[in-house]
Image (cartoon, rainbow, N blue to C red):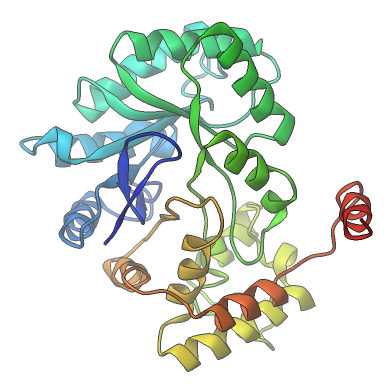
Length: 335
């Protein structure tokens, strides 16, 4: 597995990041440990979790796995934002909540520092200056090495960067957004912003919960039993069957299956490889429930789709630009 710099930093991370959201939920601790071992064996060093994943259990599993290992060999990322209790201050990006949760994450992970600490989503209830000054403080204290954002809008991210720059504070080094062949709105604004400001992009759900895994075929009337999409439909999660069962989705999947057959790779490997080689992307975050899924995903590295296949997938997955992006693009094309 190759290594890439995280944005404009000097930090090298593997071109695939292992997501730990399934740990302690869909994957038992035993399976989670095996996946961590296999990921490292394959050359990976980048592991992403969050305090809210299984209400801390995911971090605890990663922490027990880390014990006895050389800590500096790994880049451990976690997040803060969502509820970790029933109290009024057990949620959000206030100074109180961040300071409480950084200590809790360090304790669960069994480490003295976190490599990448990310705000999990925009918090409109907390002044941005309060959040950013607190993040700067925990970097200066040595508890965190780098900071990042996840699920931010364009103006959120640019404002945060500008405030940090003007105040001389530690700035975001990366963005963790939703990005895959079925979800490309990131490209309307955020990709250009990240490229311009030097932020790395570490996409979550690069297979959109399984839609791009090869398990789905045109003509299906419902998601297969046992798939995440089946659960997503029942729970009302964003990647649900009712949301993505569209002609646009099936066109993308048809082309994905064709390309996978032509290059002799699985659909999941092709979908991941496409994301890995998009502008600004540092490392897609792969999340697996089983060792079989992990093994398949790991084989997305070590090769690259031909330009022809990249273009076919890019073209079929394009969506019409909304205003003002369409107006700006048309005006630019007329120059």
